[in-house]
Length: 281
Length: 157
Image (cartoon, rainbow over all chains, first blue to last red; front, side, top):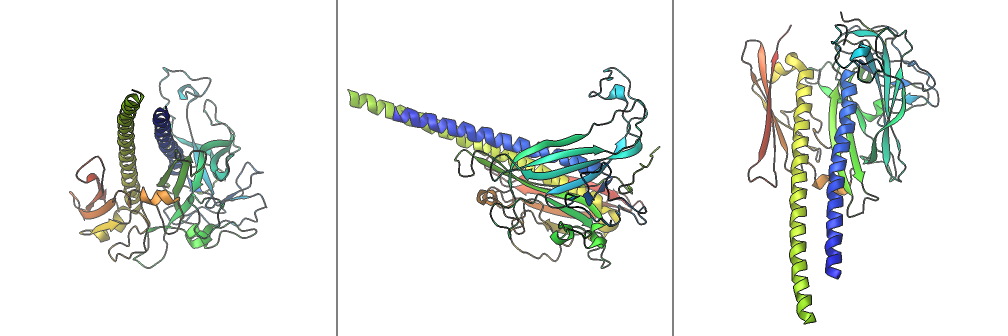
């Protein structure tokens, strides 16, 4: 009986480990692929957003002069609840593109056999603000990524399908790391890092895609993002996440999976935070 | 009689346990293989994206060079040939703190992952070839596994 019980126990633990390993790998890839897709489609990475506003407060005062993507530094006297780009918060501007309602499976007017409209994919006025933020999960010492989508207030085109606003949709759960080495236990993981084109004149470094130093993107009460010469050239995001499945880390059946990935902005010469879109005819 | 039955039960139980553990180990190896393949493909995509981001004007200066890129950031190393992509392609164990078992299971440390970045002249004039080779050890394979990609960049100026 004891032997059978031991066999049953081994079988249960092993199948649970395999299931959690598979689950954590699928969940991590799926969540990060979604964020990467949004980064690649974004016209800009925004330094801040006021949750009380439907329009990002941080908008350009003038269009960029030098290619490639050169978002201007923004002067924000941001309030206490302002969301700031940082290791736990990613703020993107995604351009609106035309999609015929009849061609959108999510739209009530969708027609399965309808021919694809020639206007599908054309850039139209307006943009979406997409925010990914890391917040504590229901389980102790674990965190989750929430996604919020805020459409910009523009007059909607007839027959064009738009995405509705989304508030705090869960993208991934069970995140336990990575942590800042100098932070104490129980600190919040730091999952986003930002890449910019190094603008230094020295030829050995110019044009190299470097990650920004932590001090370039620290939440500060009343100041702008420091080091604007580098932060104005944000061109990509790195994502580091450590997922855990199991009640505690010490659970013999718990599984931990660490993932690193990067994504760069792909739209060339995209105006940063412009309230009006650029038409690509 | 009872002793004999007990011995038989123990023997059968032992065989079943052995079989179950063997199946479990095989499944874990397969899972690790799959994870390594996914990580290698991810690194390949990441370096390809960086390559397109750098473009011809930057990479023309590296023709004839073959650079080993950093996979896991575990030690401060300086490679004078590598001023192109100095940050870790996979996990950074220097500037971030991970769970203890993550480092032993990582692609670079655990599986001996390596990435070689080679730039040569391209098939046409004003073009360059960039070859990215990702290799790693696999418990299910006697030899090292490899994944490669070649990208051709043209001078559009």
